[in-house]
Image 1 (cartoon, rainbow, N blue to C red):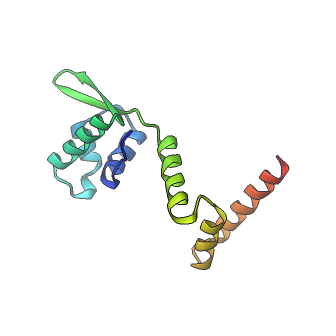
Image 2: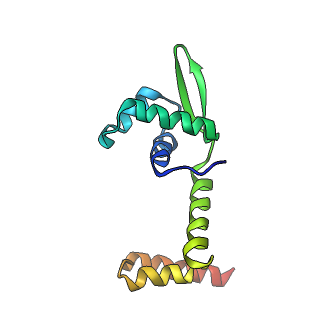
Image 3: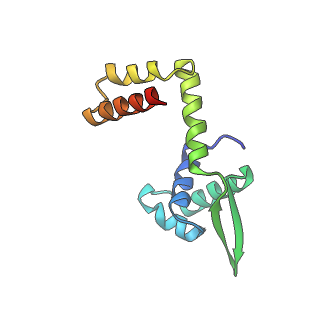
Length: 121
């Protein structure tokens, strides 16, 4: 599947949250983006071409549903980020956020819990 752009990912989020949806429903869901209707329809067509979504006819309109699952997309994106910026390693990524003061107490607690769970496996 071809790479999904940031704008296409915004449309995918709408469809991951609720589907099937018509183009008008997607336009309404993205009203806060201030994108023109033709722009959103172009993004839907690009996602169709890439195979990320499917369309089924419903009378005179099409209903769109995701084919690409959100979990698979997130895994692909996170793997690409790790590979590009941190040579595929997680520890330097966590260190980066720690050094910038971007880890909350809750983040640190969750990381500690995850490490404990990994140690027990």
